[in-house]
Structures are given as structure tokens and as C-alpha cells.
Length: 188
Image 1: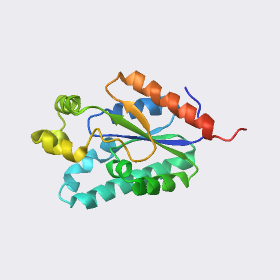
Image 2: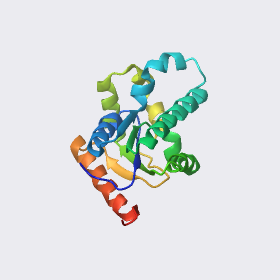
Image 3: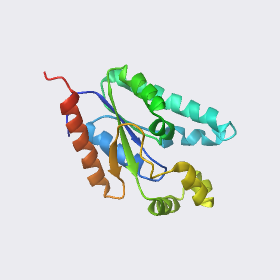
Image 4: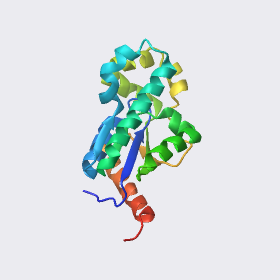
């Protein structure tokens, strides 16, 4: 198990279907940290939230997600979060607000961006067969235009080709986290 010197919040982001939950869980396990998955936390509430305006729902979900991370940080554990974080990876001001909020607790905040080309991504969504993907698959061209799954983040990130084997992706992330930790952690 890698030993990071800095407490780290790893934000595993990307389009639906890229493998965020699977990869985040394995990174969390390797770090001996806490795992927070947007789907696991909010899936049961989805029917209740569906009747609310989209922006209001998004704000409430992400505010709650970040509050969960903040509740874990005082334990000293690393936290790995699996969620799209579309706004935060596209808008540097939104990312800076998030990173500043979490780093105020003493944690290093790292964005990991998983990407998969459109065709394999749509195939993954179809195989997954989740109700939350039905609308995406009903009009895949429109969803792909909105989701922009191949558009890289506008902020610093660890890029991961999520078409590779899960273990290879996890090893890549851990290696880059260790490299980053060695550079940023104070010698002691």
C-alpha cells in the first residue's frame, strides 16, 4: 500500500460510464482511505430530486458531497471521491473554490480525469443498463454534445485513459500521486 505523506483528496471525475466508481474504490482501498461515490450516496434520492429544477438539484448534491468529504477529513484519512464534477473540471473558478474549500482542512486536492472515446463510452452505458442512462442513450448525439466526454479539464489533472485495464489505471494514478506527494510534501 502506498504511503502518501500529505493527506489527499482524490477527485475521480469524468463522464458517466467511464469507470469512476470502480477505479475510485480501488484507489481508495490501495491508499487505505475513505471512498465517497456520488451514485452510492444519492441514487436512493434520485426519484425525490427528479421533480426539482436541475440546477437546484445539482447544487444540493454537490454541496452534500463536499460536506461528506469535509466530515471525513478531520480523521486524517485520504478521501477518494467518484463524481462527474463536470462544472469544476470545465471552470477553473469552480475548481479553485472546491480545491480551496477542501485544502482549508489541510488536504492536498488532486483531480483525476478518466476519459473514454464516445463509441466505447456509449457501449459501456448500454451494457450497464442503469435507468439513469436511459435518457442519454435515447439521444446519444445530443448527450455527447452536452457531456463532451473527450474535452479535457481546464485545470491541472492526472489524465487516465479508462479504456485500459482497471488495475493499470489504478497503478498509473497511484504512481502519479506518489510522484506528486514526493514533490509537494515538506521534507521531514
